[in-house]
Every structure is written in C-alpha cells, then in structure tokens.
Image (cartoon, rainbow, N blue to C red; front, side):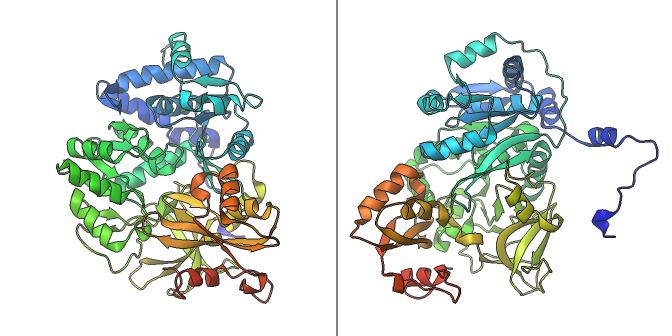
Length: 523
C-alpha cells in the first residue's frame, strides 16, 4: 500500500467535515478582517473615484443579495464580460461571500470562441459593461445579462447591505480563468478560494508585499497576473488602482505618484513605458518589484527598466493553473544585464522533474515539471480527459521541461506543445492551425514560434497550398475567427516535401523554427 492509499489519521470521535471547516479559511473571512482593520482605507481607485473598504463591503453585500434573489446558489456560475473596472472586483467579492464562481471572459476572443467559453460553464447570469453589452446580448440564449451602469446600480439599491453569512468552504470555486486549449479551444481552469488564498501568501512571502504597497490592475482581470494580486492586495487591506488596460502615459503618472508593490509590465509594453517615463521626466516614487516573464524580454532592456524604476525584475515561471509557483523566486538586480535566466523554486510548493513514465530524472537531465502546492487550481471545468492526463499520479504535470542544476536552480528547456508566449498571452499552434486547415486550398499548415523584440514571441505559419493562395487572404480569415494576438505575423508557402518530418510522419517544428533564425534555433 502506498502513502496515498493510507487512511488519514484523525482523533477519535472527530467529524472530518467539522475539522475541514474549522481548519480552513475563506476569502470572505479574510476580506472581513481587512474591513475591520481599516474600514476607511481606500480599497479601489479608478480615476477620481475611490471606494473604501467599508463601501466595498456594503456594495458587495448588496450585489450578493441581488444574486441570491435571482436564485443563484453556491457552486453556480456567473460570467463577466467587461474591461477592468471597480464593479468587476465588486463581483469577485460578492461571489466569494456566496460561494458563486466568477467565470472571467477574455473579450479579445472572437464570437465563436467567446460563446464556447461561456457555454462551457453554463452561467446563470452574465455581467457586462456597456462596451461589451452587444456581445453579451448575443449570448442571451445561454444566460440573461446585467449591465454595469444604471441597471447594476438599481439592482444594488434594491438589495440589502446587511452582512452575508459566510457558509463557504476553502475548496469552493472562486474564479474560472481560461487557458488556450491544445485542441484549439480554451479550457476553463477552476481556481478555488483555498488556491487564491495560497497564491496571496506565496506572493507575500516571496515578494514581501505589505498593505502600504498599492497594486495597479491594468492587465485584464481575466488574467491571473492581475486577479491573483487583486485578491492578495484586498486580503492585506491595500489599495487596488484599477485602469482600463495599458496606457503608458497613465501608468507613468501612477508610478510617479504612488508607492507600489509589484508593477506588472509585459513583454512588448516595456519600450512604450520607458518612452513615456522619459517624456514625463519624474522618477518612480517607489516600486518594490517590476515585470514578469523575463525570458521574453531583451536582456539589455531588463537592465534599462530596472534602472528606470529602481526595482529588481521578477524572473518568473508560473501558470494560470499554478499561480506564481513553481519557479518565481529569483530576481534580476537593478541595472544588471543577466547572463543567465535560471529560476528558483517558489515557496510553499513541491516539484519533481520526471520522464515520460513518471520517474524522477537525475540532476542535469531534462524532465517534465510536476507540482504539488496549495496554490494549485482544482482542474479544468468539464474536461475529464485533460484532468486525468494532467493530474496523473497525484501530481499536476505542467508539460514544461526543465533541468535542475547543482545549485538547485532550474533551467528552462522547452514548452509543452510548442506553446507561444506573445505579449503575455498564451497561443497554442493548434488554435491557428485549425483555422488555416479549414480554408479551401490549404493542404497542410503548421504554426511555430519566432522571437520578436516587441512581443517576445509571435506565431508564424508554414502553409502547403493545393491552389494559388494569397497570404493576406489567410490572415484575413484568421482575423475573422480567432483573437488578433493569435493571428500569424507571417505566412510562408512551402511544398509538402519541404516540411521536415520524423520517421513517424510528424512535422518537426523545431526544424522550421531554425529556418526562421538562420539555423540557430530558439533560445
């Protein structure tokens, strides 16, 4: 009998359900602590508007009362289709109080992709901003819409601000964030209250964030890089500054006037921010940490941005499914051009590097990273096959390959399924290939990654044509059917015989990538 098969020891006569409840924490309980500790502190700031912790508590109580009045119960879902705004975060808190799951929709997706994502989670209600009201209305056959604005405020005004009893459990789902699917459609990653709380304390431990450090939520709230840190900030009683996406000038002004913890900067946006900072002329007031995904940023630019804001760059490796773990502990010092981007394991997680049979590999040998952590998500929504594959053996297998070095650091080797990281977004080749292969005149298509000085990586397509085709025609069809950041930046027409294949007939993508880099391959 293995350790996993052994019964869990408990004191005689103790109900395990009571033990689970009394030993757990909920997001609502921790938010209530922050409200009691600083009711008049600013929780949310959006432009000139400020919402205190007391006000956010009362408004989220009213929204919770409205949702409950609609019959939306613990474990059921609401979908959100909106740009970043205070009401988005109010919805997070209301859902946390009721045990409802907020499914955060990527509004960059085209209609068919968005419909798939909403239909997957079968929400009882869609909360939408005016900007996306027409897109939400097109999904009326799935769920009705409550629009942020007058209708939303009327719903809150008609509800009670009385406290909501905390009947939740740490394993209750809190948000669903979507990841690009290897089969061509996004998967919904269910993240529990337990996982979001764990992600908060891992950030607080590894990045020493405090309640005095504000967070700028400019990256979309359907992305973990914002959502996880919003929850962490609200748990601590700090201020979340909400902005409507990336605006280099606006972000520069915030950096000059606010004391920040982590300043999110994605590959592809650093140059614009640096230019805006130079034009503004003011120094950063105080930044503890800057950036994510150092691998996709030119190394000289890492030195430039850290010098500009006076903060080290975070050398991260995480995922929607894991949060900042497994390997986001190392940083790049201010003004340094790094010679290595090896990672250090995050706190509060256990990792193994394994071979295809699940056996741990020796140090120095490449192996797939498998992880255990309280920050881990609860699985993909309605996707038993993916869950069975990725959670095999009691570990979550990320599919990313690393080597462990003698000093304990981790060297990244390759990404699962040739995942493309473009400007902070995940792009899987299969998403683009399914569109290309559906077009008349296309005999075969393969998409690979190419290094890009602005976006880190971009998708490039190799197409075998059965008849005369124009690249712009195929790019136009892609724009109609997939999000713009997934559209190939180049299309190369080749003969079938020019596609490098293995002895089993599989196209060797790495050989195509070498062609794009003059035979040198990707870093």
